[in-house]
Image 1 (cartoon, rainbow, N blue to C red):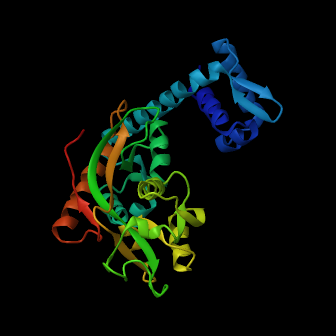
Image 2 (image 1 turned 135 degrees about the vertical axis):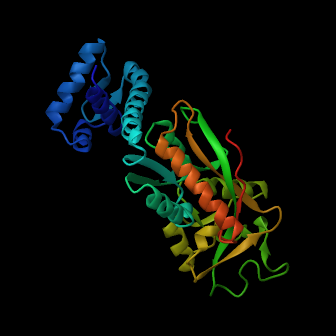
Image 3 (image 1 turned 180 degrees about the horizontal axis):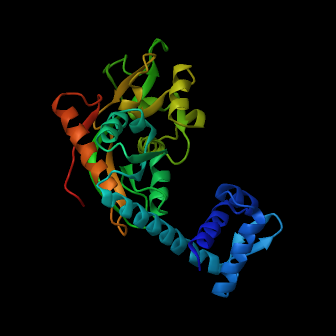
Length: 319
């Protein structure tokens, strides 16, 4: 059994297509197929059901997939750990973060880290929190900034709460005459006031989508969508265009002069942002250095009043 064979097997398992997997691995399709067959002969099992146009995993393939992902992730970790013995002069860190964090304080923290460790290559995956948890559990990320609580992943994660952020209702500055927050009790909007208002909703995989749906249902109604399925930038642009309102992280409105954020009436909606990594993989030196750099940056920003509105530092000891 060779690492290359496991990489090819994982690629086919995830794409369910030999040709697409070969393209992703930058290898000729016949060579990839030959290596998969060699792996099957070595293991003495069939890993894929090869019905025409429908590639699926056999029971043996299903059993091998999480092990293959673990082996490949641990091999990559070992490679980078050896590189980092030179004192963080070389290496790579794969970081995941939600879109609002990427557009917020994370960029400045990454700049500080890059200045401290210019030899470390940074790879950033921007995605919804639920998708980031999946990437972490598969070994595709070293560290991620996710939203708690964590949906049950395949692999247990170690988390450290660092920030709490308020969710607000995003509305156009030049909207209707009675936008939320301008009637009785101006400055706040209760969830039930959104009952008859069209909402712009994020795609599945965003934790703020689930938080919004849960709050509306607890208030006794199903929200009405004007449009759904967008990423962060698209949702904010749709609100600017007047398609509807949206519940968004407070810091997502930074640099959006055409939008205003209306606070939700107490107790409001808040989310906890945490650093997370796989519990069964020892963090690399680069990962530990980035965590230290990020907390240094956030502590300095909190002390100087430089955190975005609605964001509070709540760093806790390691879980």
